[in-house]
Length: 123
Picture (spheres, rainbow, N blue to C red):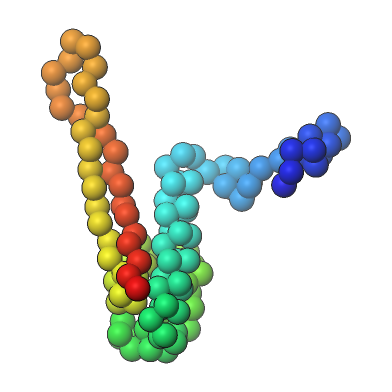
């Protein structure tokens, strides 16, 4: 939505947001939803790049074509494990990277920083 339209809608007293706002999701839930959707899109793209049908990918995963369709939609009954398995079965690679948090002055404890789940498409 462009800025002019958004301002006009807000000026009329309406609230502008996304599905996560509507559902009252917190930061963690938003991150998980974003990761699930991006991974589902990557599965579809990876499958298509390798010329696989949903039925072909289903055979690799030992599941059905309708289940693959649900995986590619990131349906609520599809686990992250299933999404990751489908992506790798379609020829993709998943890399997990971690970093330490920056030390704060006067504190010597090592804290976990960020964990990055990188989805790497193959060609």
